[in-house]
Length: 517
Ligand SMILES: Cc1cc2nc3c(=O)[nH]c(=O)nc-3n(C[C@H](O)[C@H](O)[C@H](O)COP(=O)(O)O)c2cc1C
Ligand code: SF4
Image (tube, rainbow, N blue to C red; front, side, top):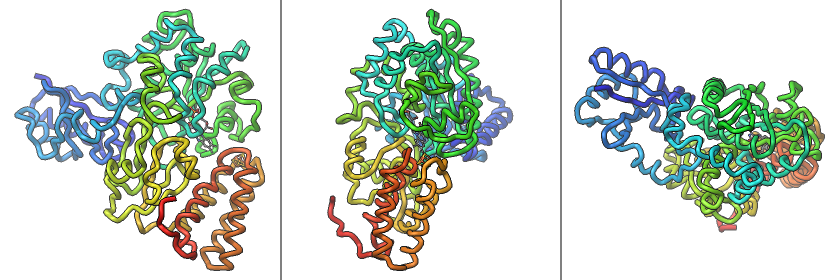
């Protein structure tokens, strides 16, 4: 009998030793003289349980974790007997943290071998493309519009509308660009897709090509993601061989091919126009809009640029229909959001769920509070340009508009948790410093204002003329907000002002009354 085991090979799992665990399992198998088939998958996203090993049983997969190399011998012996082991977590799908999720985009992540097109197809992959080809270009676009899908990279712009603009623009060459720069603090969902289910991204991009008349695509991956680039490269080769890419996509008359490009490491290169400059081989500098990339993007041609998660959500929309997807969520935030719980949190990882869940449920209930065991004081949602929310705002539902109404943003869905040892004045200064370091330098409010902002916050921290300097900081933030060319300068005021508004005591002012605003 051959034991079939699944061990993640995604960067998050590798970082905590899944490579050593895989090697130890193989060595133990040789010693115990058992035949083992070891399949390397992506991660399920329950990172506190990594390295998590799954074993195939007659009743489905059973999970064990976190497994250390020295557990390999006893684990293998247990698997040959009744499966009882101190690290046994039970049937994987029944782990409450996983069971509570609605995995649409991440349905196959951690389940399949990311380099096997056959495995992808065996788990329902490719059906979205099949249906897309039967619909034809205009109907694909309308289905994406109907789904209510909004860009998952941060700005939340309706994906279908963007595709429609490119589809309606005349050009002999159009491009599909995937933004895999994933620069936001506490985010890793793009990486998980690229390392756990890369074919879903390839399929989504191919559908975008067919819908808009683009024949060539690029995936721009941050340089810190070498595993993602390697997995995606391998998947592209397999996709070409299997007819998912190339001259006749899915056996149709459409042609579409993809290339991977690796960035050089700048947060601003995640901004779409700066990314396009970088992709063209130039320094990543933000372009003034208009023209929109949809009209004049890569090499001056009409370009769809979307985040990894936006493209990866398209196959299921095509397969199950726009109405199915739209049924999840609240208000104008439709479908599911892969939320990433990070920072000082007990249960950190990827939690995909319909929009509408509250911040408090995510942090206290699903995340289990802080890893340090101390009270949660603040959470930053939406990356380094997102606002810090105190506990009184934990009733905010995860929804683009609800966050905006409270001067926050959900961005790429990252939540970074801080306990009561955090100094919010230092966090505000850090936001200004981040902006100063990462500024592309094109416009004055961001290039100069961020450095002046650091100086003003330093004076407030030192207690120098606090009242006057606080007014100056507010004024500077307004200038950044209204006068910056892109959201790096334009949104830096969110973390700064939210820290000042909700945690004034850290800036030497009287504490704010703790009533819900
Ligand atoms: C400074 C800055 C950094 C950004 N970084 C990213 C990023 O890493 N990944 C991403 O998808 N979008 C990022 N964006 C948003 C992109 O400009 C753009 O809105 C997005 O790629 C569009 O795709 P979507 O509609 O699918 O979200 C960033 C924006 C700014 C202003
Ligand atoms: S706001 Fe900053 S990053 Fe954006 S264009 Fe201006 S200088 Fe560049």
